[in-house]
Image (cartoon, rainbow, N blue to C red; front, top):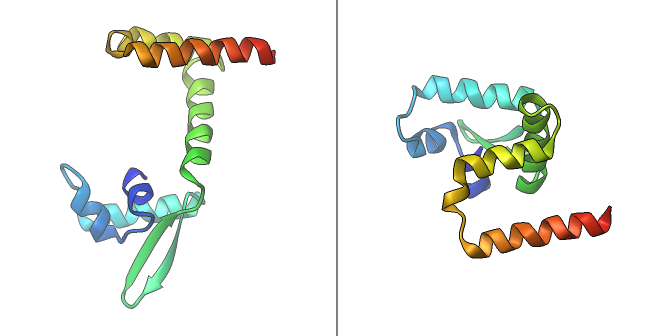
Length: 112
């Protein structure tokens, strides 16, 4: 999906060309077809090629995926998910990123 979001649209060959250890062309096509059946991507025909594009805007898709991740792995608790992220990557946060997180927490407290 990242490749499709970066390029806005791409063929299976385009997607495959950007993968670090690419599977077969048919495997990429199969994956894109599954994503299309799920309603995540759509395609248009350009001569003999199918050109795929994301259906939802990246931020909408990101929020939906994050909600599913939190529900599945953290019992629906955003705090548990945030704690897990900080446990994994807390040392990698810059002072600016920490300040931004603190401000977002304070804003969430004010908003109730």
